Amino acid sequence: MEVGRHWSYSVSANFKTYTTDVRCVRRTGVADVEGYVLSGPMGESRLAWKGGQLVADHLVNTRFEPAIPLVVDTEARVRRTWSGQASGLWGHAAGTAVLDQGPGEELIAGRAIKTTKSVLTLTTPKATVRVQTMFQPGGGILTQREWVNGNLVLSLERLSGS
Image (cartoon, rainbow, N blue to C red; front, top):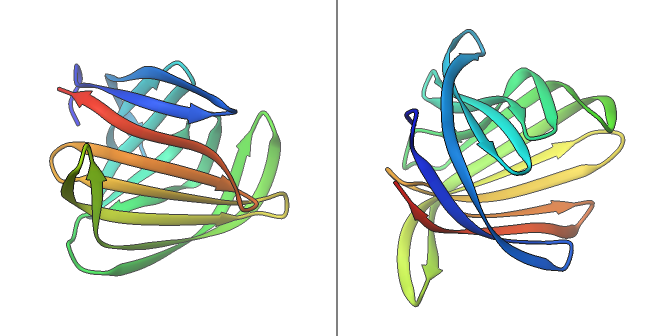
């Protein structure tokens, strides 16, 4: 990540499909280290690399205390756990999460691309949210799908990035 980078995505949500851009707009503190703010039409996210993990203390409309792990900088299969507080306009809840990660592959435009597959499952008394992200080394998020209580609510695919 660096200020000025941007990515375009095709997004499917709420029976609508549209194209959107996400930009790395500035540096900021995240989990006691230097991180970055990513901004798009849905809001801002605050991410940083800490101890070999990409963590977030704020994802669009939810804040996490402590920061939640999203991906680990390794090609090996790994599992991480998280316990803390999540809060947003929807309210406040204690939660736990499990991050399972390993090698993956995604078919984009008929071409198989090697990825790191990250599956983050967050459980709170209000909902279970599962986010599957395919990270392309050096390129960021290639695809992402999000389920809430078992229902697919969001799907995105990167169209371009710089």
